[in-house]
Image (cartoon, rainbow, N blue to C red; front, top):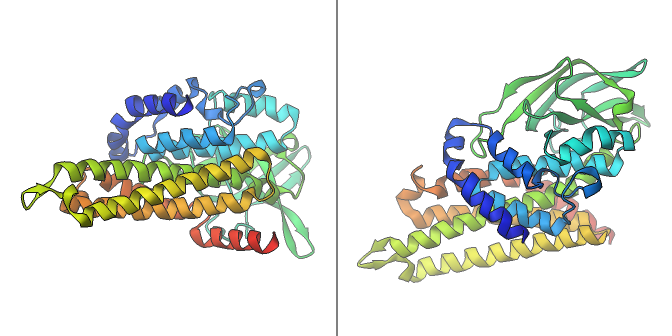
Length: 371
């Protein structure tokens, strides 16, 4: 039911505009309003807080279908669900849930996640943004990079240094409202792919945040961040599967229609073998993603390891499949008149955001050595 309903909306309302929005770098606000009506901006949030109450498996299925239509829309939905709504559900006070989670889950507001900084990407603990206690507030100063939904979001889950202990930075999570004085877009990234998803550098200049907006414990920011990334990695794995499946479908149809040497190229063994490998690897990526999602639903302690496996394998599969789809199209695959060119560009970031493939391998190796 979830797959069918999301697929219908994605194919009718998102896919027809995907190329135009990509070319213009246009934020898909209209489509997000429709997704909010379907409950997809709060998919994994219980109904009591305004969400759809989906389990993680349904969430993965929905994101796959959205990404097959336009991965820009899918990543916007993934971020607001996985790394904004979910941490508020997991670590928020009841007051925070009522004030922020309910409108986020209903799609009345959009969320963003501010962890990375110019010098803190894979080394996420190397934060320089500081939060200084100031009466009933904290005053935040710093810069955040690669903020998906930056400038469009209403709630920014933001990490900042609040002190040091035993020579290590203590990092705390804060909920910052989008119209907070001193919070501003300092630059917009013009990206290779997923161009309809706005990604920004955000500056914080004396941003005052009430103490009531500390999410979780003081100094517990990295726990908030890392627990959120398990969901995020399942989401990006599902998104990667969606891109790969769309690229395979395009390549298959093209191979049936394109003729060479008097017959469709789909009749050549070289093309058949490419399609066979592509389909097999996509199915493996899909099943690994759904397994990680099922483990999340079951409360498995190994969820983090399997989420990293799913994200690693699915993202690298997406890049490989999209490259092969372009190859099957030949010169036409290099043209913007064909969809595979966009899938190829969109897939490239999947091995980088929510933790690079190299970081996923570190997470996986630690998990299997510890188990």
